[in-house]
Amino acid sequence: MTPIDTTAGRAALLDGSAGGYVSFEGWVRDHNEGLAVKRLEYEAFEALAVKEGERILVEALGRFPVKHALCLHRVGELGIGEMAVWVGVSSTHRGEAFEACRYIIDAVKHRVPIWKKEHYVNGDSGWVNCERCAAPGADTVHHVEAGHRHTLARS
Image (tube, rainbow, N blue to C red; front, side):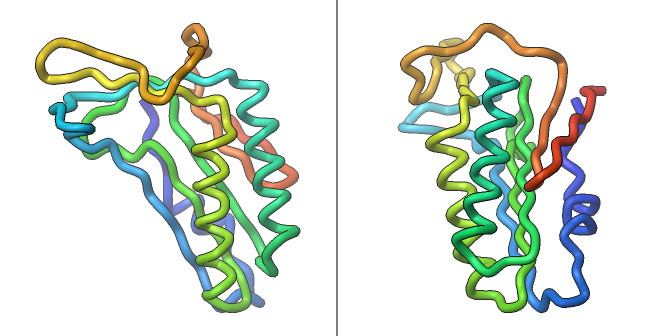
């Protein structure tokens, strides 16, 4: 699978008028609620996920005086320590970049139809916070940037 390219993401946010840049990385951890986790599996309703992700970025750009915002989220199987999600924001000052970055990741976690299945060391597995999970999606990884949609193929 193609890992998130944070260097390219950061480069996309560069702006001569921006004095601040903030990013967030969400990694696969080895435990959850007392259970040892060996890997995660993410599935998404692609069309709706991209549309809602774009909506969140546009909202962030409207709510906070920031220059640029970008969010990348992987789908498929990920191992411990792999990056699942990345958010980057550039702005004139650091304060609004921090606020916008937090707004974006919180909104993505609550609103974007991406589901997480945990696979445990003991052999069990289970969907996390999932009332209704989608069928496996296409072999693609998506990221959205306000006004733009980019798709990266899995390796």
